[in-house]
Image 1 (cartoon, rainbow, N blue to C red):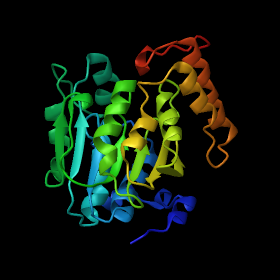
Image 2: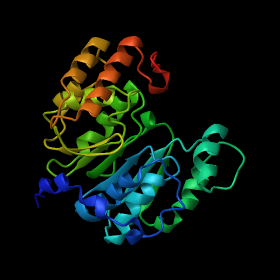
Image 3: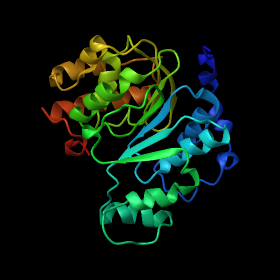
Amino acid sequence: MVQDLSQFDSAPWRSVDPKEFGDTAPVPTMLSREEQQLYAWLTSRWTQDIGAVVDLGCFVGGSTARLASGHAKAGKRSWIHAYDHFKADERVKAALLYRQGIPEFEGDDTYWLARDLLAAWDDHVTLHRGDIRDKTWESGPIELLVIDAAKSDDSIDHIAETFFPHLVPGQSLVIQQDYYHWRLPWIPAQMQRMRNWFKPVAYCPNDTVIFLNTRQIDEDALAAGNIGQLSDAEIIASLKRTNWRGIPWHKAYRIRKMIRVLAANPGVRVGHEMVDLKT
């Protein structure tokens, strides 16, 4: 069944009451309220149970819980696969876990915590621990791919090579959670270079853009989107061509900031190493 893309124009997820899908509040998340609504809406309303839901970079399960809540409420049977290092240092624990009600604990391992927090959806979710660049995919079609792990050029290329070929044209969505993050210019650059295989359908504050896969991902697509082969000038050229739906000025500004920062950090391809000299 070909679904009506015009439904994205009205952002119907904004009317979703997250409590309708169960209590996800105890699971810490960095998602905005609207992103949380979006994830529950996507798995309850958009997905047709023809492939897996894949969550790349789930921290301790915050995004996974919102995906799983909508998935379970709708009675979906396909599996949710969540990937992360499942590590957090003391700074991250204090800022993102303890402040959201998680009791203090020793060590940096958070795998056990994610398992506990996601226990309510245990029959829907599989956790995959480790570096995303070491992971493979052998579990069939992917209907929804949520990406919050493209923090470097080699990680974004590995994600594309490993997961994109399993998308279902005309149905599968890719959620680029860091599309407008100034430290990660390779994300909009890659999606612009793969414009013949993806169509942007919606934006969700703060940084998230939703793409529909329109054609089967093949070797040509992966070659077009390969970031590791590109010079700074080639990435900047792709960023300058990024202008879907006449993006508003404040988003165009963020693309311009990416260009400025990339130019000031020649050859840098790891997000946390990017420095904005004007801040």
